Length: 248
Ligand code: SAH
Image 1: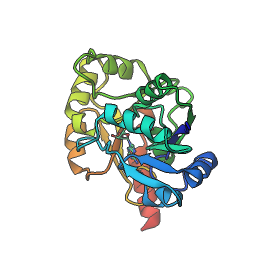
Image 2: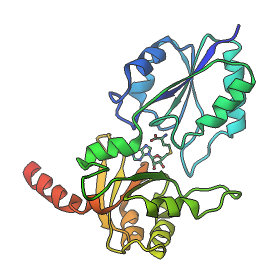
Image 3: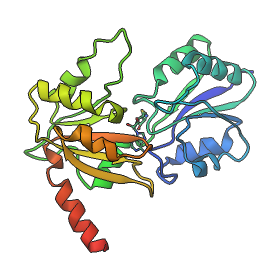
Image 4: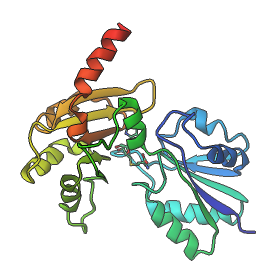
């Protein structure tokens, strides 16, 4: 027999930010290979599946990609419904293509179920649109984490070309991000919103500027974080103060 491997987006963290299709497939799954960051309540929807954690927590040990590909292929040869559950959307910084290519080469049917990527959930948390008439007409999703054979300035050029840039996997490289964007002409005072643990109760928003970014990230905990950079974030600090005053 050959089963189907479904690459499923788990969303940014909150278990109720999952698509209905993802929830249905979790219920039907025979075996699930999931990222480390997937919420326990999301995994709990998979009542009958064997659940296998396959790492992928930036900065920590993660299972080698080729080994994951092989395990997915082997699983599809002995299970009907195989789910590969990935944080956010599978098609953004999730190494989905390597898995799809390996599965297709092995003759295994693949489906992909989109998820809410963390940049969009962060925008919801911030109540700040990525685009805004007269301020931002373009958005770049970039990551400064590059492999040895990729020219390492391409991400910065893309971030500079866009009105709003969302940096994935960038908190640990904050000093390099700040320096690269300022060197390419972005103003040091450009507003930045750092959002940690998007969509979860532990969520934190830190408003800062491009120049102050390296110092600002020191206040982060060890949750995943995004750097959102652009003029649209000019009022984040003000909005936060008003909200905190209302809550207090
Ligand atoms: N496919 C995922 C991204 C995987 S790359 C997606 O679509 O969101 C991992 C990076 O995503 C992290 O380093 C962080 O920058 C970001 N990220 C993922 N979940 C997050 C969360 N809950 N809060 C903040 N950032 C998050």
